[in-house]
Image (tube, rainbow, N blue to C red; front, side):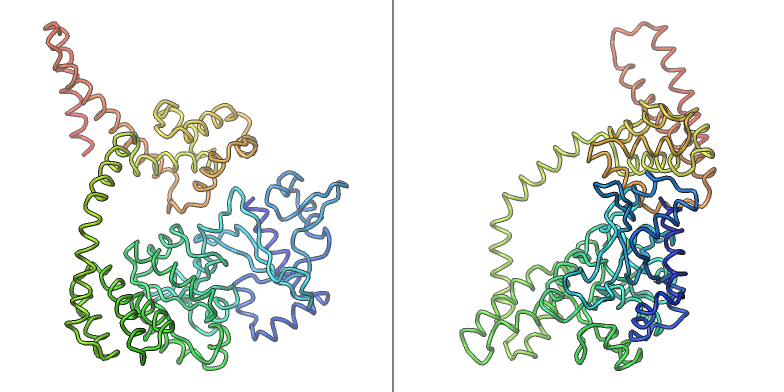
Length: 484
């Protein structure tokens, strides 16, 4: 699927420079995109009817492989029809610059046709786990990431030197995207459209990022509806100034709140103050809260004592109402922890094994199968995938992928998709396998050590049995000491 996506990106990009793509060429000129940008983002133009399908077949790809990507559909008459036709094409890449999907923009002036269509989710693409242009933005010298809504916003900013811009693929920001952003930046600046939907998306996105410990801010933009229009009108210097003056989540919430009330009216001002205190009460850091109280007091001519009084009342009410709920919550968490038999690190290790066997079969299967058995897998989904791989190991990688893809279990398919789109930062397959095997062997030794300690507590053990267990325990302790 990665190979088909890569070949498709080349096919679309090359078509952009042909005479038949005049409508697309006119559009990119209108949007002021230069040739360097077109090549950097591999922007292209999709063909008509089944041109992509015929091209991929000519390159040796099989029908079922092409259909699995969702780039081509087969109708009831058995005809193959390209999903993207006569559209400006934007390849979507993962953080390693592998093409995983496509977005296509309508070029005809026809409101009956969707303005944008995107690839369906599949084995290598889940839109909530990717960010457009992150593969380029992660190399930026800036410690910030600028988050925009659309492809064109991100592309326009990159062309004008703002190389730390990424787009959220038209979805509300997800936790998975938040973790990706957190990995590559210290601060995130939202620059969404100024309409109502854009402002709501900012509020949700800010909360996602703040829950993950991100310093998230909002760019305040006037005189343009989106970043693309703003930077073309005013230039990158003024845009960078907006980035530097971006406001925090608290300031953004208060700004949105202010639009609901007439602060010249006493009743509205009281309601506004009460709403503000709820926002301030949620700030855990006392110094941060103190700064905001001082700022709000001066800005809205409300005494600091009045704000403190309301904040303290809110905190007191919430602490009393939540105390019993917190106890129940902790009990529920503890029960879940008891039921869980796999840690995050173990799950990640198992996921990496599956990833290696699917993507690097020839390099990995011999060592993995020699050292790791089905029973070593704690996660049930990983165990099932491993069994499928073992059953088809002699048939090769294509058969393994085909067998996994044909399973109808949605949970298993979602789990495989998560594994396939994750970035495990593997620089050496051999070293990765060695590290995994060392860790597994160490875990087995520790597990056996705990079993022996428990067995030695049995008062019915004979001297010979106890001696044998003690010798085994000593050997394990020595072996563990060697591997420290």
